[in-house]
Length: 146
View 1: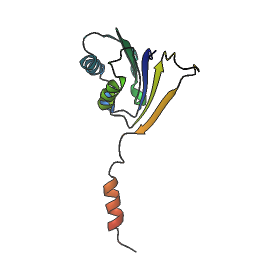
View 2 (view 1 turned 90 degrees about the horizontal axis):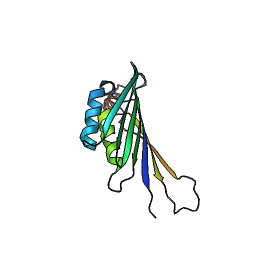
View 3 (view 1 turned 180 degrees about the horizontal axis):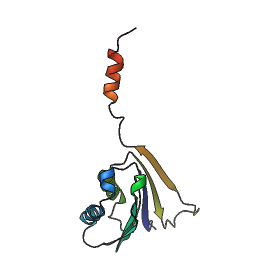
View 4 (view 1 turned 180 degrees about the vertical axis):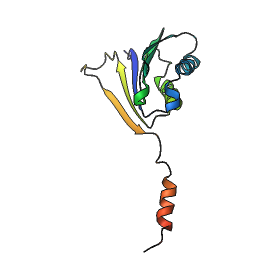
């Protein structure tokens, strides 16, 4: 028996400030990526936090945005074999432009395992290079010796 579903959770740190507060733009990019099926619900918790949730026949997506912390938590769940949660993760990464991203991938409903302990793959990767690193190196090389 194959696994029943897959779940991908994302933690996006130090996201681009100008994208975080754009609720309509976030909903638009999700609709463009997922199609017309999921009806997206959003709730503004206060001035600095909101959530966007979309349910569709083969899964769901939930985004929790913390503007003051420049942080986005995402949960992508799919039961369909042809849907790849990693593709949506790439769209979110491109949209929010985080400095660092942590992703955790879970196979759900894997009945073939004798041991029912979940196997979790977690990856943390910095996404941006040091800014102006080249300039700093050149300044060090050109600096006159005393």
